[in-house]
Length: 57
Ligand code: SF4
Image (cartoon, rainbow, N blue to C red):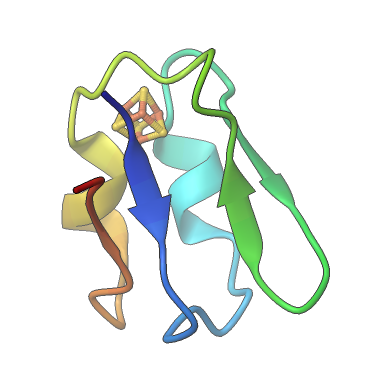
């Protein structure tokens, strides 16, 4: 499992600095999480100011 970033992302980059495994990078219009790298720790979800990060279904 991995976290996912929704369209609520405003590309502030806060989450990328919190990820311990560098799974988050800037994508086209929003940040994206590499599902193969993410260890589902939840650090980014707490850091996101817009609540755009959640657990993948
Ligand atoms: Fe990185 Fe943890 Fe967020 Fe996964 S859940 S992207 S490992 S900070």
